[in-house]
Length: 216
Image (tube, rainbow, N blue to C red):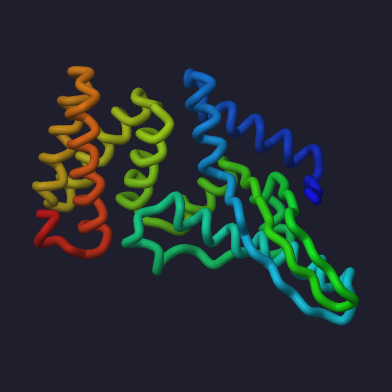
């Protein structure tokens, strides 16, 4: 059985408008890809409480917090996972969640087991990340998201921003690899762009992990 739950229509509308703004100029396939990035599936919940109702409500809350952590790890480089913000609760979590589905639920008098699919508000999630992460980590996140969704105009702007940051920090290799990616992007060489972006992603991970010798 699948149950669908939603937060208020106002929050859902805000989320849809934010997603529309984020994907302005992108095609339908890119929009669907970006929406999937902010959806976390297969979140297991298993809660025992004083009653079936209490167990279910606690499971919903715990599942959304677990999904938030999974989303953070999905959107950010592995090297910054140890510095990610803790999952919020209450109204703060409600502002991040657009809605959720419950699948494969089983319940007894005091226990509730299910799997959840949680959909997050992209604008709210990004604002939270902006407050929690450094500028280089932010541009790394933006580059990954823009590359995955085919937002090449935004990708180019983020590349220029990343190179300015790298130059300021003295990360010469990072800046040079960024320049190579920019060249491939300008030439429209998709094969070379894929290869140079993979190298840039690795170099960014090294820099964010503090591996300055490798990144420099």
